[in-house]
Image 1 (tube, rainbow, N blue to C red):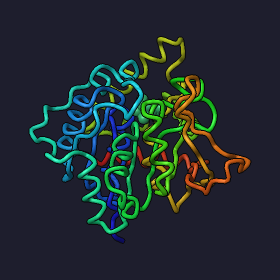
Image 2: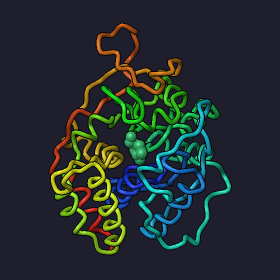
Image 3: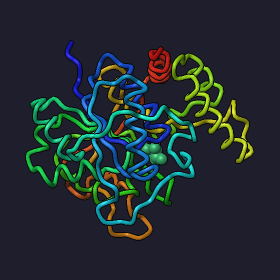
Image 4: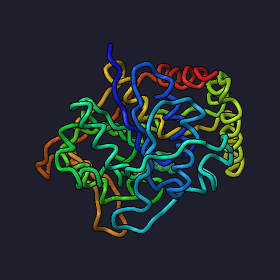
Length: 314
Ligand code: BDR
């Protein structure tokens, strides 16, 4: 079976790294490029992390730098969650290689065109790069088979009452993507919470790491510190490895992934609800389905994907 050509658009990021490891460790996909965006930390940091991960994992793919800021809203970050370097303070070996001369949108477009409609995008951060590609290249949409994204929320938000961080980071970009006609599979906040692992499960899953062990140990220590700070017992505390759910959605699509179809728009006007993904449950807006919302997946298989991926790198 031929591998699925994939571009990972991301802001690594602890959970981005896990998603990248899952995709890199899978024989179902062929990672063509990692494109970077502002998000968890600034663009310089996310790009450095992407370059370092490419080398550490021995990936043969392009790395291209994208947008340093959102389309309209002010720049945000989540360094309080991921640490100042985005990787819980863990230092990967200094990368020797560099990023492409072409920007993320040009790289994404050219790769997608070459793959003739088979390209899949896995989007793990604010959607600025994808939106800019759509706006710059009106025919881009016909070359993209599907976007698997971590972002959005059918219920409450994690960085505002209703907005999930990635969408809050660039609501206008999300709206461009949702209106583009590119099919989207959305691993929203609820899906990632539903698939959260306990600290004990995380320790067991990451214990299979070989080369990646120091990195996984640093991620566990980081989460332990957080659990401690909220007075929770780590072993029973539930931790969502958010971005891994978009990777799981792709890898388990056609296996155990269950989705529901919705028409979704992104709120860009309201100060309180900016970045909310609005699910038109009752069809008031008369829009056409643009999102397959992830409802459930086989949790054993999902956790198995992470376990196998961390064990894959020797
Ligand atoms: C998302 O926000 C980021 O901090 C994570 O990397 C993930 O992409 C979860 O809301």
